[in-house]
Image (cartoon, rainbow, N blue to C red; front, side, top):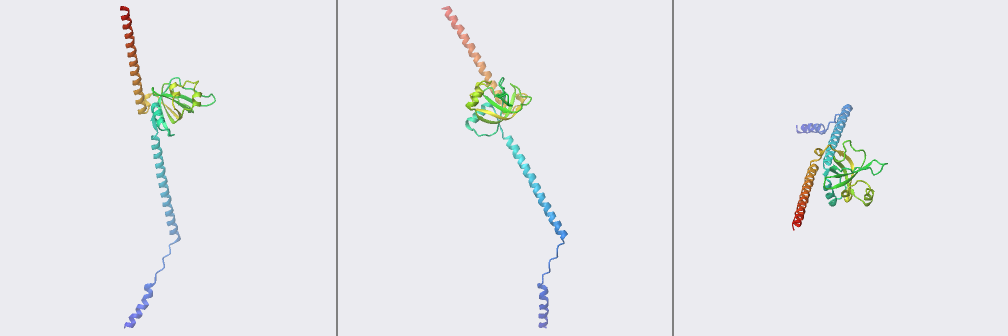
Amino acid sequence: MASSRLLSSRRLLPALLHTPSPVPIPRAAAAAAGELQSRRLWTYALTFGCAAGFVVTVLATFQDQLVFYLTPTDALARYATDRSKSRVRLGGLVLEGSVAHPSASSSEIEFVVTDLITDVLVRYEGALPDLFREGHSVVVEGFLKPFTDDLRRDTAGRKVSDKARDCECFFSATEVLAKHDEKYMPKEVGEALERNKKKLEEEAAAAAAASQESATAAVALDGAKSSS
């Protein structure tokens, strides 16, 4: 009995140890699986590309918003402490009588931007917008550069204000944005213009009052001399 059980176990052992061969996958199914994986990879790549493009666009917009608006007074103060070639936007009024063409054979144009306190020479090569006018608001984008002795000699015979010519820098513009009036100026530039205008009016009023006081004192002195 025991021997028969042992014999049966020996017969069953090979069957238990036998590993069935894997069922072969049809070629069509394998091809379909490969195509599905390829589609998934392309989907991932396309999604990543769109996300990367969106990030680049957002960063470019953010960087554009980081371009600082400066008045001519701010520009000189910035240049005195930081002469890096970072792009800035200069806002102010186009000084009356300052627009000139340095060369008849070139499209280069120069004019002076003022905030009523400080003047900065601007040089630009290209066509000016239709709204560009002397005495009107303007925003120029570009870089502050050193005002060299050669440039001073070059501008000596033109309508560049003495204040602009005495500056350590001038503005090399890459873009000119003309505005209708001060309402369209950047807020910080418009506020600076209003402050400077008020300051000039107060100084003019103080000077007129001082002049009137001097004239009154002179008349009183003359009267006193005549009486004596």
